[in-house]
Amino acid sequence: MRIGVDLGGTNLRVAAFGDDPARPLAELREPVGEPRDPDAIVDRVARAIEDISGGAEATVGVGIAAMLRDRVGTVASSPHLRWRDVPFGRLLARRLGAGHAGNGTRHRLGVYNDASAIVWGESVAGAARGCRDVLGVYVGTGIGAGVIANGALVEGTSACAGEIGHVKVRWDDAAAPCACGQLGCVEAYVGGAYVQRRILEELARGARSSALALAGGLAHVHAGHVDAAAGEGDAWALALWTELAPLLAVALAGALAVLNPERLVLGGGLLARCPTLYQLVVTALEVAAPAASLEPLSIALAELGDVAGPCGAAHLAASGVSIVS
Image (cartoon, rainbow, N blue to C red):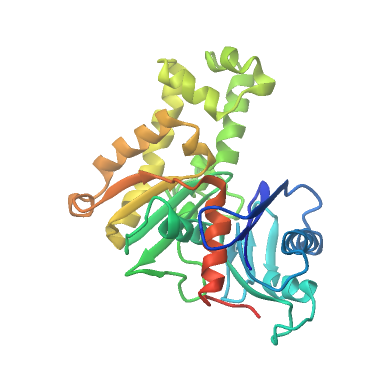
């Protein structure tokens, strides 16, 4: 059995796969919730793996919303889990327990950055099928990216390649603080959690927008309502999107100039439910990116949705990439 886990800043998703990498045999989903200390999270992940495996031995891949330090799943920083220097891979392997796999656990375990797992899933069964050079960027709670070069996942020296969310788009005294501890990261402007906070703050201070009516009040408004308002020509919503879209486009343009991929896959909850913002980002990218990088490039929306992360993580582990134990 192949099991894939997507441990994000908001949700925990687990899926078991057979021969079809895009169609799980079984799925579990629950909020990450509280508490978020490593022992509590490891226990919840392990219980979900045990539930979906039914006690059978399995190959398990875990994609985690974190900047990793090595190829055995040590978390250097996870702003949304509020972790620093956590040996997640070792803790999970220990929690899964001894068994018959011959390597200290009942399951063969690999740990990956969540965006790397997602882009691998899209390359196996989604929007990047058949492509050997891919950049996938996902704008959800935060912003992550995965890179495939010449058909192989690019993990980097310490497995933290692809951290496009922490590319700096402002570097001055007014730069926004990021949960990673630095200033001016593109995630601090366009990451879903930051966008939601800004929307609520500006509307609470009296910004006038049809997004409020679309949502049925301030308590219910989210980025999708702002996007719908922008699509109808709402001045405040359009101004906000017009400010934010070029910041993401600049970060993407730098990555395209360095990597020269054939396919750019854009996804994540924020872009998936905000087509107006998505189009503004693509339009700004056409101005910001080098023409030589754009000529061979095709841009696609992610296809697999929530199954991409578990699919990619399971496939990477089954392929023997970065096995913890």
